[in-house]
Amino acid sequence: MFKAVIFDIDGTLYSYAANDKIAVESLCEYAANILHVEESEFRTTYNEARRIVKEERLKDGGARHSKVLFFQTTLELLGKSAFHYVLEMYDVYWNNFLANMKPFAGVVEFIEKLHRAGVKIALCTDMTAHIQYRKIKQLGLNKFIDSMVTSEETGLEKPAREMFELALKKLNVNAEDAAFFGDSLERDIEGAAKVGITPFWYNDKGIFQNINIPCVEVHSYREILNSRYFF
Image (tube, rainbow, N blue to C red; front, top):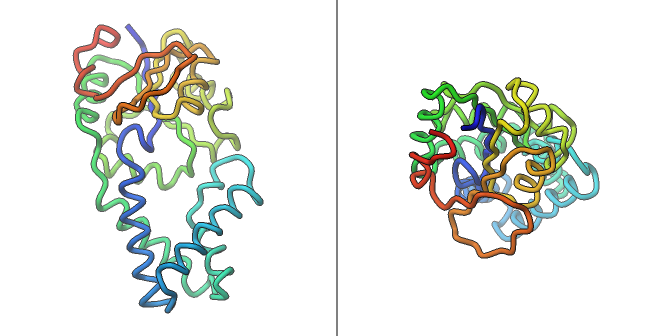
């Protein structure tokens, strides 16, 4: 039985894509009403701003995901003052994002059961720390988590081994005693396997993909609530 379980957050504990869609739609309304920018122009500019931040300016680390930087760059491209609007845009996006978050079916029950069984629990995520703490609280999981590692903290993103090694260090467990749950084969599954952590691929959409890395494929948390791997 594993002594520790490490989880990715976005796309693994809840649907990032669904909440991002809602949050961006709220930004489009803000842009139309406050910035007087049509939706199509705003979406095009926002996507270009994201590309600039993630591909031209920042190659690694949690800041690549900073919504403040995305919105600042969007406003600069639109010829608008970041000082007038960027913090409002940040609140519009994240308030709508968080308000609609729901954990995947069985997540809370599974993590609570691990906690009751004395299994240590950590998070390992490519994001800035502040918003990840807010997400975990919104999902109702904060009382079960022992520690978190973010790419903001390490300056590197998964699959960098430093991310996984720091998670193990915080939990004070060896790699062979830990499991890792993630939705990305490249970032989560490959990264965990390279340091000797047993990877569990969360594939709730049933995507068919050739997997060259030994891992356990999971389609629902409910199917592992009584799994021999953990209990």
